[in-house]
Image (cartoon, rainbow, N blue to C red; front, side, top):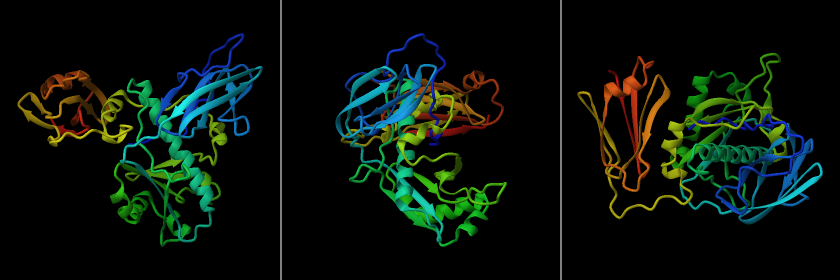
Length: 363
């Protein structure tokens, strides 16, 4: 799974003569299952402050009477305090930590001669991981599946348990590597940790991004992130929540609906895991027989879809209490739904327990 880090909006384009201070994306006393929440609403002043106390409140910009902010909750009942312009607001949210044992590990790989402060590194990884978790939950909620996200591996102090791995190579040696060599090197370094990951992992690299103008490393504020272990640039890595909205982005990240449907049944996305049946049933299977796509799903079929040329293009979802165990689709029919697909058609299915299967139809 890939994520777009810190795609927080600074406001929606609405003009109003007078705006009350509101929270629009949560209900009062709503229960959330992850610690960092992204709060959106209306405000009158040029900025707003939000926190679980006035003393700890962080300030965020207000643009066209709209704001997007972030606040971290403690387990149990939380009272949020908001202030903007002439208005104040108290708003209750309850945080119930997830009990799903399948947790995402955070791994940080640095050079042998790295000099960064380990506390700053952990704080930044903590903010980044929790922000991505919250963005995932918001994207899933907008897609109609509720605020689902994979649980993070948290320590007793509420911050992530960061696994730090030092490369035997120096920073100069690491930055001289091309992307393919970097990926292979990081994979070797983190292999044993990745094997321990029950759900997934996020690998942060403390090297590899050099300013083309000065040929110097941009340091901790510009790192690369690897997931399984693809490499992406991270343009801004905040140390604290108050730094988040220094990024000027257009809107919150969103997921393709097909991917949202598929991940909504994934065991790692269930807050309290899955109740496993007494007898473990087989995962789904797909067979191509003439024009038929034959799908067998002993646990019940939830999602069936197809994508062409890497772009999710069509899917159907079975939401009833008794999902079908056997389904037939037409290969010609699938291609007709995606007229622009000229190459391999990938067919994917997910069952009620998150089991999945895929097959490539080469036509």
